[in-house]
Length: 89
Image (cartoon, rainbow, N blue to C red; front, side, top):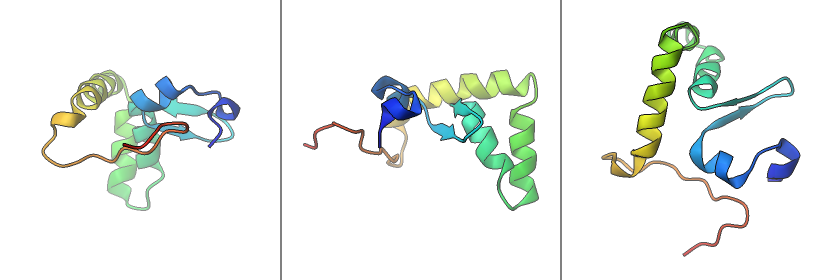
């Protein structure tokens, strides 16, 4: 994937989950909220709208940052996609 064409750096994609559409680039909690809003189940759509509502959006972003920095300590493995140009060991 060509990160330059998307306007992203390796640092961007290593710190945040991204949702990229023709209209916008969303990162972190905003990307999670948008993904939830596009789910077929009404419960997840509700969660997505709730995550975009102040002050929940502020708390969601704080929670996203805490979890993303501590993901290596989570009890289950988390998915790490290979970054372009990253060497496998």
